Length: 275
Length: 318
Image (tube, rainbow over all chains, first blue to last red; front, side):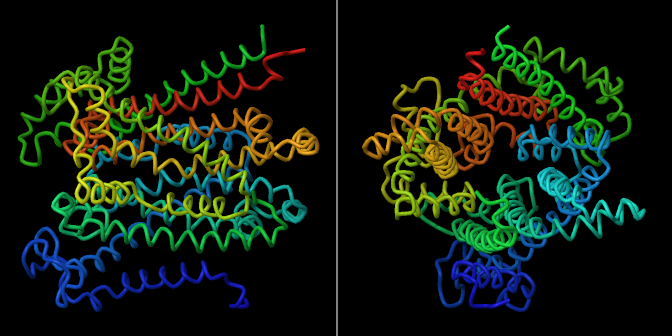
């Protein structure tokens, strides 16, 4: 691939996403203080010792931002993984098997999608035992509905191609057809969607944490940090805006990359899937 | 029978059926999943006797199907049950909060819909020039910004720095309409910014679609000005898709309200739902979940019905 063909907007996205990912991976090495370590007064302003100031309990905000990147990105990535594996496998199975399997799966997905995701997540979270696993599974399964629809639609298209017909005629099983014929041909569309789903997960997780129903303190995550510091806003203390801005920046960066991939793949396919 | 009426009747029946299925799903989601209501109310240290008593009191020993139909029957006559934590009547509490939420959502709708359509028209008029590009860029920003970022920015700017509007949206019955309007201005503005970009982008797409028709070319050839073509020829034909987009965004707005109410401490349904999720008060959560889902489905249904009504081929059958 020629690096010069990557547009400037995609470069901005790639560079800033890389920074976030590096911060998340090497969090304990980069962060100057511990995640829950109280190092100063409440809501101290930005200074040389505390680059972003301190938070509502006197913890170093910069360190918490870095640990927060780790939590937020990891949970969002795991939930995206759950959503993609269940969604795309079920979607492609529905398309290949067809008939009743397709009907039942598709109607159930329709039903799940007729309830707003956030509302249904709140309903389910009110009874499930709290914890990271619950959070990842709830977010992943609810979002899998969207991946299901997309991958089913793509798989229905690919399923009628001659090479799939040929594979069926030479007696390949369904699993072989899904993983060896359909998946590779649906991959470019799915990869572009992957970025958008990941962003949705980051926003979803942050909203849940902001509502106090996501990741529990003292674990640092960006949505939860907005909640912790929001009372300072009315006194003119902007500590809550920093994690909120980080979420926005990450979302915009990943969107810039996803846009670029989407444009590339539609070019390859002669404009299919464009406007 | 008129095919349009028949279609509408069909959609309404389907909507009712969907709502029934959704109520079953919400009930199942809170009852069949692991987790014990009695245990979560009393905590880990509860004795087996007190757990058994509470289960009896809450009717948890009945089979799930019986409890579902009891619950559903109650809802049909307007009885949403009682809250576990406070023992208060849910219907009463919901009534007040629902009207507060609908007030906030309609103020946001009144600001955002005309603005989105107007900006969409402007984007079409100046297609591929800077107003259009600006609108495209703002769409990207708006799907990326979390509601609380927009909300707190507005608070910092308008409430803390300028002091024009209150940072907490408190309303009560004694307030005049204009006082209420002032109180909900910032939350309504937040909601507007959340849905605006998507709405105007879709308006733009809908009108551009119509602009490729032959009759638009005719209008151009007979020498009409571009704004006149858009307003007189393109816009009326783009109304159906636009209304569809508006309704979908209104449905989104009803969900966005949950986070926005928490930001501004607004006494609406969203705040009520979130409070009771953390208290694990299942009857309240079920009731709120069902109401939110019903509004969401209802708005989608309206979008469906309007697009049938605005389709002349269905209205005037041969």
